[in-house]
Amino acid sequence: MEPHVRDQPERSRYEILAGDDGTEIAGFAEYHLSEGEIAFIHTEIDDRFSGRGLGGLLARGVLDDARARELRVLPYCPFIRGWMGKHPEYTDLVPEARRARFGL
Image (cartoon, rainbow, N blue to C red; front, side):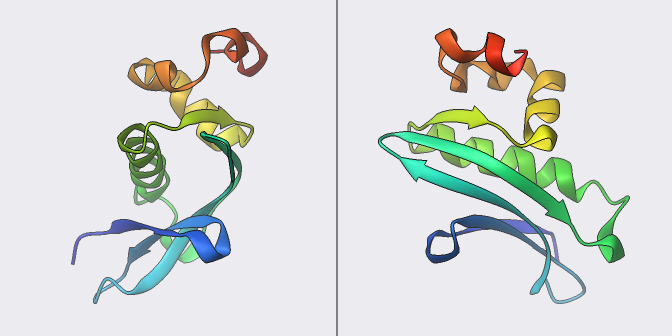
């Protein structure tokens, strides 16, 4: 089964599910949601799933969801910020006045 990303708002995080049956939590991205902004604060991929590109799939999934929900993104998490730096098509999600703070 293909890995997929789901929002778990009660836990303030997105999870990426993988494994043979697609139900194992392979990683997560924690966030704080407030007044039209989503601040990503920590991202983690379980060591058992490292090297499979799941971090990138998770980053793309959370940012695509933020775009669909018209949320402004604050990438405090170094992983999300670094991924955005390599994928400039997502820079517009960060408010222009705050991009320099994140090096974007």
